[in-house]
Image (cartoon, rainbow, N blue to C red; front, side, top):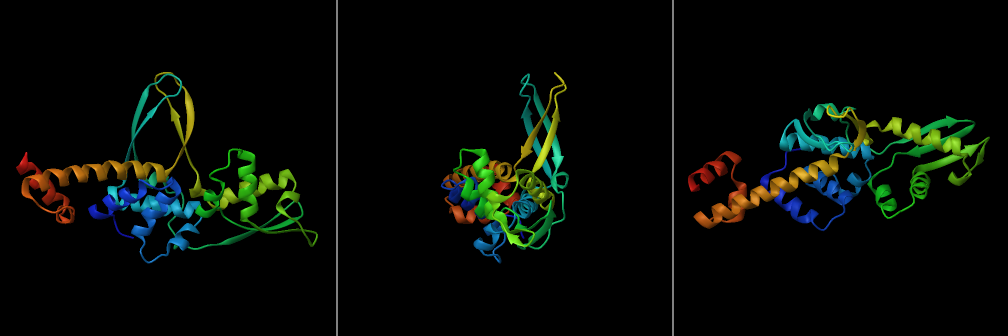
Amino acid sequence: MRPLSAQQIVRIWEIGQRQHPLDRALTLLTFACPDQSPHHLASLSIGQRDGYLLRLRELTFGNKFSSLVICPHCGEKLESTMQVSDFRLVELQPPTTQEYTCHISGFDLRFRLPNSWDLAAIAGQQDVLQAKSLLGQRCLLHASYNGQVVTYPQLPPAVIQQLSEFMGECDPQAEIVLKFDCPACEHIWKLVFDIGTFFWAELTAQAKRLLQEVHVLARFYGWREVDILAMSTTRRQLYLSLVS
């Protein structure tokens, strides 16, 4: 995996204008991992996918995160700087598709972890319970009780709940929850950190900056966009300083 170039940042941003956030995440990885097929990348567990997105973000924009969060209770603005390493819960592993087994209350279960295909399948679901049920049915590969095959709807609610928790333990990178404590009103709340959304916002801002630089240099020197974007950041900034 290599950092995204200026040309790639602009191209990914352009492609992503017509895409769902799930597809944007895969577009990022497709550019960063040309040796992996889009189908294989979509089959990665959500935790694996997010681990690769974290690594790509670190390579492209550095190890520091700057964030601004507004307290939902009093409106106080909380600014903070964090490290990418703070969000890495497991070491990055080669992309693989794995199956897992567990035994819960007499039920023998075999399953895989949710991936991008699964999230796309439930993206249009308005009912949370239905979405969870569909996700579980897609990820459960086999279930039996005392040697008799059973289906997902036949599993007791308590077994489904334990299975869901166990799946979460198998893919800890899939959900990162941040805790905030407001110094003004002492309100405490939690937010789920989505690296795909965060990375896309940063990439959008960078793409627009790059296109603005292209506009200035192309107008002043008559250079082509492809040549301006191919320059190193140092050279491009030097020419911009001369123009100003």
